[in-house]
Image (cartoon, rainbow, N blue to C red):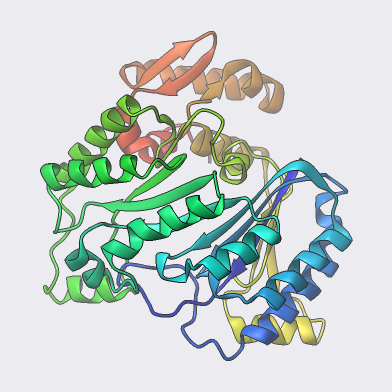
Length: 373
């Protein structure tokens, strides 16, 4: 099984914190859809006839595509790929794009999972984030999607901003749980230098993130969502039983995936590729059959490091037998040596090593201690 990611790099407006690749100029959208369809035809052999069990429309804001644009992309996908009968088809969307008409279109297209970027239930905070929706739209968008029949919905939340303390964050979690979605993704706010928030921070107009408060909010969230029936299966992700994100889980389990669209990444087990991060250059390259991506062959050290980095973020953890099988005895010896040095951060069960809830706060930092240059 393999996955396909399709990057739709357009947004109505720029969120103050966002560092992803997107454009607020929608004039090139028809040409970019054409280029995406061409790339699908060029790249289908990348997955070596693997059956597809997930497609993820990310961005940007994929819900800005109209019915005809979606239909054209799906026609190309179905022409070149074979889909598993239980394939997960996800679209990222914002509350302001969720209308009855759009929901019916997406359902007719066999999209069966919605990722709704709520981010907050605080109108003042949403305005500060430069989001295009308000708190009422956040709630109503989920309820409307459920009324139309979507039963696999994930919502995004952000914690760590200057608008939140432990009390308000717990109220946010209560509101999220009351929406009865199957999945919640929650991310610690980060200040990226090239964003509007980053520029204001450098000028002293916005405070730095309070790391202690963010850590406490993370631990509160972990306990609260566990008590509410969610499984904390990855550092930033909580799902009800049977509703873990299939597409993102494939990333963390090192399964193959093809990335389509500007800035999209691909992985086939032995190498990584990433597309050019410029809409116009991407379109031009596909029109003129020019190269539009870079490629990196992964050494055994690279693959081991990525295994550690991704697995330590999950409940599946690092499996000693799997490490030996994939990388050999020397890598296993080095792994176990480092584990013993940091034993307080780990839970071991039948040779599978996972992080304690507290250690998940610095999972990526811990992973780097295992890296082999």
